[in-house]
Length: 545
Image (cartoon, rainbow, N blue to C red):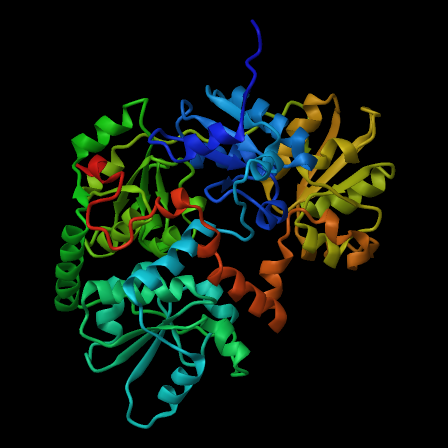
C-alpha cells in the first residue's frame, strides 16, 4: 500500500480556507520561541516537541482539514509533523508551500506575540464599547482618598496574581466575575476596578460587568500591573486574597437574571442532551465540550475526558490553548447558569459558534476521548534516585537534557547536551549502539523523544523524569550559566514576553506598544472575523439556530 503523503497548498489557497466556512485547523508546529516571534494571525501553536499529545485534544476529529506550516529553518520538523499526523489517522493533512516566508511574500501580514486574536479582540472591544478606564495615577488617588469605596479585582488566575499584584487587589479571574462580584462588592456605590498584567483581561473583565448591567461604577485599569509598575508604584508579591468560595442564593439569583438577559441579547442557544449527542456522533462536525468552572469544581464532577476543563477567563484570553479547529462548535457548561452565558457572549463576538448546556447528565454520558501514548519497545524509565548509580555504571552514556532551555541554563549535569525534538537527530551521533539517557520534566515529551530514537534504530535508551532540584541533589558534577546554551538555540523560549516581568521597563513599554498596535496590522478579512457588540449579524450567527 502506498503511504499517504501531505498535500502542499499555496498561501492564496490557505488564505481562502482561513476565511471560509469549513472546519480548518491551522497549526504552527514550531517551538514556542519561534512561533512567538512571527506567525499567522489565526494559527494555533502546537509545537512538534509535543505534537501527538496535544493534537488529539485540540483537533479531536481525524477528518478535519489540517494545514501545517513553519519557516525555512523548520522544514524538516513540518514534514515530520505531517507524517506523524497521517500515522495517527488524520486524513486531510496539508503543508503551506514555502512556509511563513511564502505567506509574507504573497503580501499577507504576520504577527509577533501569543494569543494574538484574543488580545486584538480586547483592543477592538475597548474601542467599540468605550470601556471606561483609570490610569495608575487615578487609581492610586482613589485608593488613598478617605471614605471612598474602591475594590480592585485582578482578573488573572491565582498563579499569575501571586507573581505580582496591585496592593490590596483581590484575585477574581474573569470567568468568575459574573458569579462572585455580588459577594465581593455588595454595595452599589463601591467602585470596581479590574486589572490584569497588561490590557486584555482588564478590558474584557470590566466590560463583562458593564454588559451584565451591575449598578456599580466599573473601570479597567489602563495597562494593568505593568502600567502601575511603569508609574513607579510598588507591586505586591505572593498575595493570597481570593474571591469567596460561597455566594448567597439571593446574590446568585440576581446574577443569574443578568446573565440570562445577556444570553438573550447575544442570541446564545441552549441545547439538550439529544442535540449534543447528535453532534457528537456526526463525523463531519467537531464539538468542544468545555467546563468553564474552577478546577476544584471540575475535578469534583469527574466527567469523561471528552469534557475538557477551560476556565472561562483563560478560554477568552487564550482560546488557542483549548480549541484548535476554526468553525467548530463550542458547548459550555457551568452548573449555575451565570458564568457560561457571559463567556459565551464573548466567544460569539470572537467569531465562534457557541452553545450552552445545563444537563450535567448529558456530559456524564459522553464517551472517553482517545489519548496518545507511545508504545515504547526498548526504552526504559528509571527512578531519579537511581540516576547516580546508573551513570557510574555506564560512564560512556550520552546525556540529553530535554528540560526547558532556561532550566538547562540554570543548572545541568556536567557533560549533558540540551535537546529538543526538532533537532534531536542533529544532536545524536550516527552510532545507533550508543547508550542514551534522556532527562526531562514531562514524561510525555520524553516518550516522544524515545519513540523517535527507537524509530531511528537506537536500542539503548533510558529515561528519567527529573527537575533541576532533583539533578542537583544527586551529588554529581554540575554546570550552570547561560554560556552553556546561546540565546538563538533557545527556540522554546520567547524572550520579549518574559522580559517585561523581570523588572525591564523598556520591555514592558515595548509590550504595551505591541499590544495597542495589533489592530492596525489587521487586514479587512481578519478584522471582519469578529462581531463586537453584534447581537446576531455575524457571518456565523445562522449556525446558532
